Image: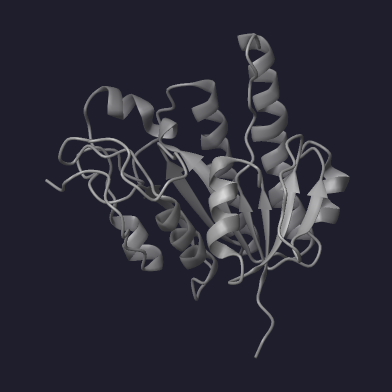
Amino acid sequence: MPAPKKLLITGAAGLVGSALRRYLRGRYALRLLFHQNIPEVEPGDEVVVTDLADFSSVLEATVGVDAIAHLAIATARRGTTRARYDQLIMQTNVQGTYNVFEAARINRVPTVVFASTNHVTGFYEREGAVSRPELPVRPDSFYGVSKAFGEALGRFYHDAHGMSVYCLRIANFPNTDEVNHPYPAGENRWLSARDVAELTARCIEAPEPGFGIIYAASLGGERKWDLRSGRDLVGWEPQDRGADSV
């Protein structure tokens, strides 16, 4: 029986990272990258503590892995000024994301799953339009701008270096398997832990190197986003429901 693939998870202490640790343990060998918050981990999990803005550390962390789930984002503590938060976004979401992709290229990591956001197309939502992966980006915040940069970077590393890159535009993720909000029909913004874990695995196991943008939402978000690309690109069908379908 072949050894499981080794998956590096950046931002492994966060909500999405915690879900992947819980649902993908056993399916993959996990290497967990933490920055400041370091939770208890299971025996056998590898732990790396570093700042994503430190390229040499990221380069070392990506040695010998088969895939990367890049989830780490800048976080602002209470009292952080807007200017300081924007600086943190530049360090983590921009410089850190470049470091991850470039380290993956150097170390020949074939697949990166990038946690993007619906804020990349947030102004479509404000106008009540259905956001689609092929539409021009319209970020509604500097955070959304930083994630649009990550998507463009992923497109470049796919086209120039043959890397398989899937960008998951995630909205609300409370890290639960239960529907926690009664969204109206077609208006779901919620993604369950089980659904994000299975989507990540489908991206890792996609048979051919590909690039794709997927609106990552559990069932019932049809009036906000075109949800078909997850099925069309990697065969993912969400199992949980955040709202009734249209």
